Amino acid sequence: MNSNVSRNDFLTPTWFLIAAGLVAGGAVGIYEMFFGHLFATNSSLVWTLPLVTYIFLALMSTGVSLVLAYGLIMHDETITRHTRALLIMAIGMLLGAFTALATELGSLLNMVWILLSPNPSSPIWWMGTLYSIELVLLIVKLIMDLTGRHGVFDKPLAWGTLIVAGAAAITIGAVFGTVIGRPDYHGAFLSVVTLVSALVSGAAAIVLLRPQSALTETAGRIFRQTALIFAALVLIRVVYEAHSTVVGMLGWASVWMLVPFVLALVLLQFAPRVLALVGILGVLWVQYSFIITGQLVSLGQTAHWYGAVQSYQPNIPEALILVLGIAVAAALIKLGEQYLMSNQRQDAT
Image (cartoon, rainbow, N blue to C red):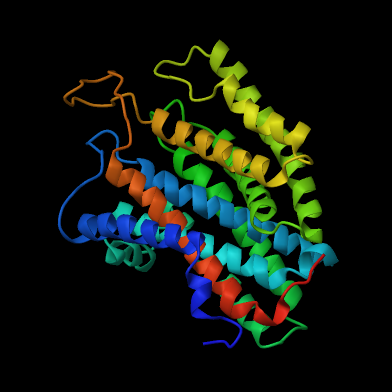
């Protein structure tokens, strides 16, 4: 154990919350994978809160990766001097996302099998593959940073991360946008939404987790700019749904979704961490809304019959998977800060 890390570092309220989340969520995940089915899915509604959790954390990780890659390519010192911290954040969030995905797929083996059974015509396969490649790139960069190996490979790694992370975020939108017969999904619009939501939530996460540093100002600026774009996208969708005559479209956007991002635009300087959290919750709200709403119209003869509109509420096990994904990400980030950042304490103002 690093001499700068003591047992008392784990006896904090934050670690108690993380431990509670790992135990409660882990118990649900183990039961789901090995003993029985707990999630509120059915033959028509197959993507529920565990998948939302995966997408939420994966896109947040993407946003952090994009900010870091941009800083490395543009030699922005306010970002590059926090390279290791941002790598730890991105890796932790992505592994938290994969944890939620493993429970959603029912088994770790199922997740591995998707990668080992290539289907280039499937956006879902590309999504998993791109995020696996992104994880490898982030880990390679972290190892290089820890060993002090910088030089000729830095910029290619940054460009590779930028391209792969951006493509992964766009592909998540394509997973839904290419689903035939789901009017609330159809089209390229969701790929734009997922890419921008990654930037919003990633920048907000940096503001939330890296306070009182020079990075906060840069991340805050990115957060406000992308929040404005995201609010515009939501507003466009609200207007479109209000005038749409597409059969079977329920509409997932609401004018109330604008509130978190308008607040961030106007008041971020007064309470950056609070409004960053509000922005992150706003992004989760949007992602949850479009993923669930798109499945609520039955497409075949089920208990609800064709064309019937279902209802959905996450049950307690599903909510605990959200807690598990966040707890895994938080635990990995805290461990990384305690064991890998000791010689960079900090810093960075």
